[in-house]
Amino acid sequence: MSLTPMTTLDGSGPGSGHATPPFRSSISRRTSISLSLPASRRGSGTVPTMTGKDLPFHHRTNDGEALPHATKKTMADHLRKYESLFTLTPQRMRMIVDAFEETLDKGLQKEGEVVPMIPTFVFGWPKGSETGSYVALDLGGTNLRVCLVTLQGGGKFEITQTKYRLSEEQKQEEGEALFDFCAKCLKTFVDSYLADFDLDGATIPLGFTFSYPCEQERIDHGRLIRWTKGFGNPNVEGHDVAAMFRSSLAKFGVPIELVSLINDTTGTLIASQYVNPRTRIGVIFGTGCNAAYMEKIGNIPKIKQLGLPDDGEMAINCEWGAFDSFSHEHLPRTKYDIDIDQSSNKPDEQAFEKCISGRYLGEIFRLVICEMIDDGSIFLGQNTYKIEKPYVLETAFLSLMEADPTDELLTVVGIFTHFYGLETTLAERQFFRALAKLIGTRAARLSACGIAAIVSKMGYLDQGCDVAADGSLYSKYPGFPDRVHQGLTDIFGPKGKNIRTVHAEDGSGVGSAIIAAMTNERRAAGIFPHC
Ligand code: GLC
Image 1 (tube, rainbow, N blue to C red):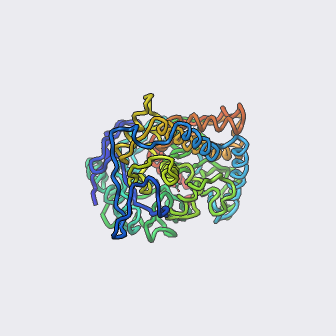
Image 2 (image 1 turned 90 degrees about the horizontal axis):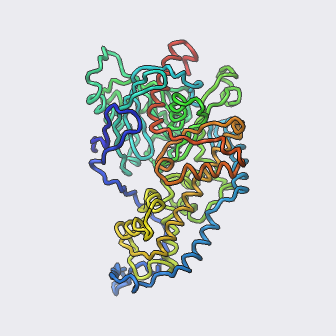
Image 3 (image 1 turned 90 degrees about the vertical axis):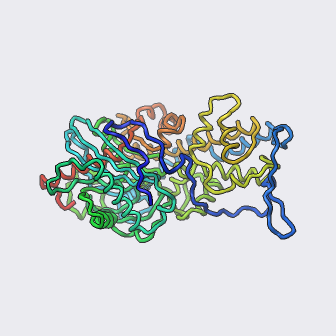
């Protein structure tokens, strides 16, 4: 297992660029999940031989005109069909928001609800005066990041970070091995960056950002409810991940003390509030999709037995990616969404997330393409085996297609020829770009529904608020923030403009450090010391 860091940033503050990974290409491959495909495929480029085996049929020509491409008219007809499947009307959005709001309320009432609305034991907002150096470890859906965050007070901080790309194998190996890997990365980081720290026998405080649904009894504890985002490491679900990580730290002798376990959304919420007091909600639109916000303790009946003051505040990690899981009553799922769900390692779970997040959008697009190959609408006579592999079409390609500035759509040409060996006509490329836009827009408008549900539940609309947002979809997908804003206006009318999303880059790591600082201060002051 390689411990080579993917990125090293030197104390440069948030917003610094990333180096190219030394051991992975930027185009990552995912483990194949087999989908059942029809036995006979037109245009798939295989012919049966006398031995009964299929032989790949390699048909190549430089004469684009000679290929039986679909005509422009046919592509326009197809587009109309997909428009009606992927378009969300304002009326439909408002219905989703109503159901969403009810679901959020339910989650606060009792344990075991589909959207778990997890109390985080992060009590209220930071003061902005928190100071000190903290290590933050952030296990997200795609990367593991290790950061040294120095809080300087007055809303200022410095961050040094190292990033490792997680392989698909690491997401499935024994749970203990995953935490051992985290501990080893942390040790490498401590040895390289903190060797000069005068520890004097003390340990370095750590904020652990573990971005999966965990039920917490206190801030340095978290029982994993279920893996999300394609992770499936055995022997972690149902266990306290903080305890598991502590034993890995002890095993490798890392001089670190885990102070707080948080979710990336909570980190983003708190980090953003540290610098921008208008922040009320933190959202992540990345490999996964989720939100956190600050709730009055009196409005969280399921923790009444803790005897905390009703007028105090606590951040809630919604885990809204689970909205509409199992019952599938509210979301307009297409057959492509259902296909993805049923062939995933967690069928029926994370229904909302599977329509929105970066892990799935490219796959939705690919399934539409495969359907069109099957019915003979595109790529007739070409060998399509490369694009028929599950998860080979990354969401990043949808971004690139939408951002293609050329009339001929040369980026789209490049993607299809380079990665899948497929030739395309201009009409097809225009269709692909339009399809990407439909899928990306639906994701943004569904995201707006989630934000609107929190806004409406908390009564933030009239006064307005900022929503701190991070994740690759939010920061890299062209037009995603604008589409979320349009969605909010479609839901609320002109008042929707009062709700503004703001990019909170690297919030989860910085937030983790701030929360560790808040926790140390709170415990030192004897406030809820057991929480
Ligand atoms: C998934 C996780 C959640 C996380 C989100 C964004 O939804 O369950 O905990 O916040 O992805 O990373």
